[in-house]
Length: 302
Image 1 (cartoon, rainbow, N blue to C red):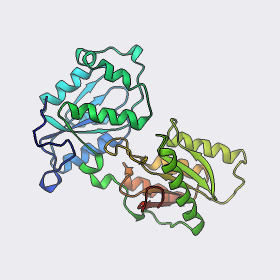
Image 2 (image 1 turned 90 degrees about the vertical axis):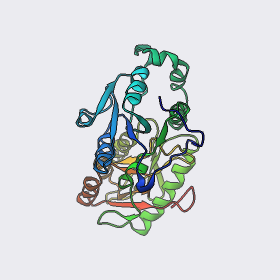
Image 3 (image 1 turned 30 degrees about the horizontal axis):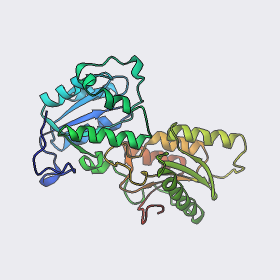
């Protein structure tokens, strides 16, 4: 297992040229991001090894050097990282909290059982921060996906063909304030505001399910509008551990926002991941939605 050098503070550090030292370990959960990140790292000539969680990660990661693990195989995970010389890690992709009553633990997991059981308590950011510290305490350095592949981060300004109206911009500003306020309680990374009315906030169900709720409200006539109006905003929570679980959007986010009758999407520039950038922008253009990257001038608004 890698040992921390005496002068290593644990903060992410890149070598000249933006490359990580040694082989990059990718702890892969669900969704397209683990594969997209691996592609980007490989294109930069960065050696890597993926440790993929069964039932979460996609089979496409098998195009790269990899090890599959089940929940509870902590010892196997560390053995794979050690064998492949992975001292620097990225933890990426969503995971469902496991039912530990049905998990078979290996010896490595048994040794860390108090830590594993603690993951069943607290909000997402609290849990993810503990996971980062868990790896750092064992000598690993944890990097954010955007540090390894900056092109995955949403840029600033208009990203698609359309621009928001003055009314849309007022909704954007309010939605950012809502996300910031609720984020202090470790609640969600997204909100929907329509004509100054907070229609929905993200909780444990995730952004897609929140947007489905908005569609249902529209179909029930609760929003009383025919033309497109309103905005989906995504941003990290205040003080969030941004090396893991950055907000993410993709083509499906756009399609669901369109189905909900929204006018567009705004995200925190440089703080939200776009796994399928071209497809996401194309979807926004096809559905007539604006797509904006907003720089947060203060923690609470764009």
